[in-house]
Length: 168
Image (tube, rainbow, N blue to C red; front, top):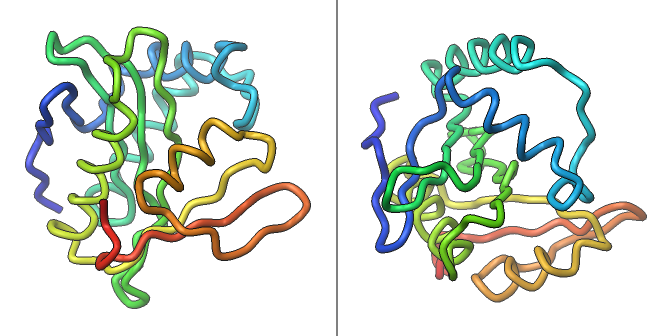
């Protein structure tokens, strides 16, 4: 899958992840200020690199896209991932969205805008799905503010969708 890399915004860029990003990704996933609403991990940097190598194979098959969010000085400040890409159903799942304390102000909006634009304009899909822990009120506010609509819930999560016609 040829991807315009990086996707450039006004305050951040999204570039494809590489195995060299393993340590940064683990720093996000293991940061107690950032990992309250994600699956915990105890893997090593080498195990994260192995996961990223396997991911790159899925990227080549058009099944997933994993971006590093960078500020304009090219310093990584977060991640976002597009996975379960299903052209037959015209949809994908959006997640692994984490931004650290060094992110520029309003970066959440630009990450959503750039990644949704990529899904709708480059991948030509019609729907983005995501799930978020019910207690993650900050994320819920951001998702709803920028165009995601709640479509279901269970005891653990709320489920959201953004359709092409409602893109922010």
